[in-house]
Image (cartoon, rainbow, N blue to C red):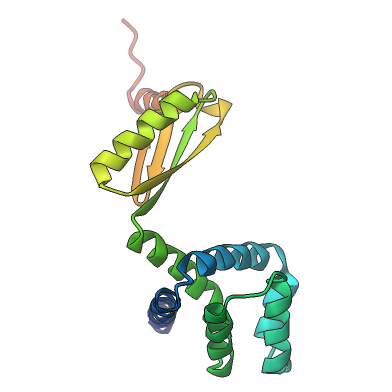
Length: 192
């Protein structure tokens, strides 16, 4: 279908540009700086709909869009990201920019052995426990760095939910109760 093809094109274009950005940043010795700038841009892009509207505006000239980009990165952008953004605008690919930035973050993490994981528990987890979990994940995945994001959610009642890439372990008491409820709901009531 045309929509599916459009989604595939978006992914291919975003990955191609992100790879070029990563290679260019590495060649210029600006990988970490570009990574930080991209994270900042994504945060602003999410919270400022006016930025998205301006970047996608067909009437706003490229020079005005470049100035807007520099304004968002008020501390001054890296030479790498500045050149990349100019390329994206001159090629009229700004509608893919958000996907390019996310693709760059993923590529950077993969190249540097960084793994993001999320642990949600019913009550706060101690730093010691979090460090043990992090070291286990690091050993099993052979990642150089594991970033464990912790969150407490009382609705879990007990247990935990662990998410890493496409892996999800839901060992929460609330999930177990829901499963039990579904099983009991399917069985016919018997009077003994």
